[in-house]
Amino acid sequence: MINAPSKAEQLARNLMAIAATLGALGVLLNLSDESTLGKMVAVVGLVSMVYAIHRFGRLGPHEPIEFALPEERDPPRKRKKKRKRAPDAGASDAQS
Image 1 (cartoon, rainbow, N blue to C red):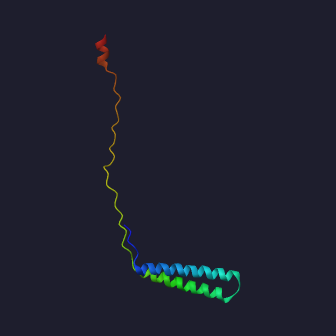
Image 2 (image 1 turned 45 degrees about the horizontal axis):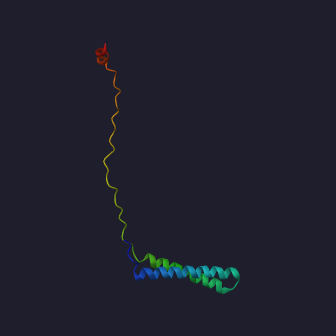
Image 3 (image 1 turned 135 degrees about the vertical axis):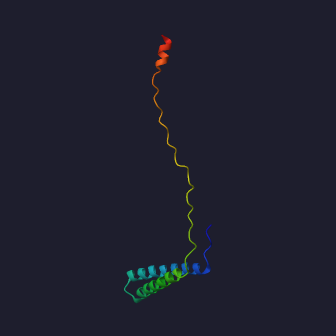
């Protein structure tokens, strides 16, 4: 079962989303014209993204995932080869 994220984890995820949006908006503003505003928004977005990733990483490890081992099966049995039966010598003697 998946646990709901904690408040700190949700805040870090929201901060990453905001930082990514700021970075993309800064790049978009920088493409349209040569103003300083686009450069400043891109820098703020980049710095906030670094901070958000750092904060998210400092939340600590999650519970380890436990993988179940496959159930052991009996090894496949070897099939015995059927021997070809030699024609009965006694059967032909009985008919004569």
